[in-house]
Length: 627
Ligand code: AHR
Image (tube, rainbow, N blue to C red):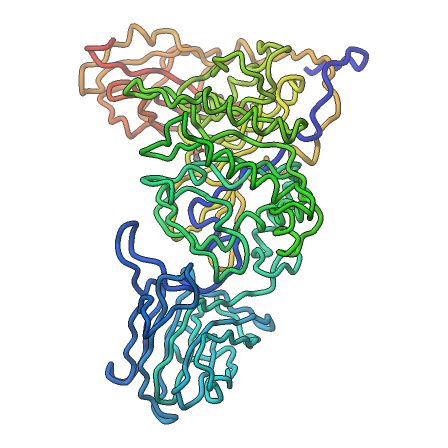
């Protein structure tokens, strides 16, 4: 029974409460929402971080290898590259003929999605002064037998230019094939150098260098009020500060962006989805941008906290790019890149998951870093809301351990469905005068819900209701992470799963969609009466149930209010009691959570008679040593 007293009003609900947290993880950007279809478009990619670049994604097709030689070239007097951001180009030595053409193919990101009637914009940079013959661009089937779109790029035959030249064409597909490939077909003779080969489908809001519409639309359907970007660990990078997100190398013409290794998540990023595009995406989603900056810490290293001025300058420059007038240095750059109006960043997070307890007891000196960033930012942008880091992993009640002012604290929780359900009241006890909370990352990641199922979504939804109930404490929240390309999952679960042609929301995604659609404005006093409360199956002897070490020969006993009909495991009901009958393998549990090496929580789902009520019986197995 739910009694609502409309006269007794609680806090106003933050209209900003629900937003999104975007990170380039699981190919969320390249091979994901960034609509580029050509993989390794500038030939800088390699098999792994530290290995030399190779022809990832590319292959040659010729009757004999001698008629098409392909190799990566580096900058030299003889072969100057396109610009200093490019470290490699592809050189083709072609000896083909109209009767025996050869092809350079690109497989895209696990296939290119050819859609009947869709027009694709092709561009590439080439140098081919001595090539004689034609070049055709094609979209075709993976076996090369069916051609869905073909366009001659006549420029080669005529190109007398010695320098790098940009060529452009469009291709309109005549059929559907989610696993199509792109090909450049040569029927002539000569040397051709290629770089920055790019193919774009129509994009979300028709932006140049824009986003894949189906994935961006799924974000749009979430009605996000803010967009936190670009991470996550992606902000920090790994191994070297070069692998961190550095905003200034991600803006301007795409051929002038170097890209970098996303070491945290195991692949290279083009930075085609760069700082400007993030801000543009937030604007297109009508979401306020929430930028997370690096405080001089990457996974595996840090700049000493008393030498972080360059990182602070980098942050201030980024803010000037987003918010400064066109008369300012970086504001002018923004205008040059097509956006004279400021983007208007109002929220800035100082670091991602820093301020963590270090197992070696070495401080990352987060508060010292924070203070310097805080002072520098507030001096220029007094209204900026500054978000601080608190312990992200393992601490259920992280605290701000400093007297430094902070507007919001970013809490992260990756837990079980039960943890989230139990956390409904988590914020009831928070200090009303303290900093506001931004739950920057949360998701069910373990327990009965690992793949983002309904149970996970319910746990998250209950937790979200608890946030709304404590609207005077929780101001912002965002589920994490959003995207996974099903062909290269680095982190599960994620709320949107996609391939080259399809996108699917998990139940968690639909919770994230549902809650903002029905966000109230003010908390009212509610009284709940649960008639089932006392009827729930009770565990009466968990502690007495000794379990032989390494065996499962206990009789765990549970008392039920009525007879229950057990659906899983070998259980018997004797006189209203539910018994486990013999030696059991732990995998008989519908879900076994390993808490640590020796402790488990097992769950068995039971059903009461024919009724619809569901019960979950939870008990602990412990071994002899730790019992
Ligand atoms: O959301 C995935 C990762 O979890 C984020 O990159 C990081 O902030 C957290 O540890």
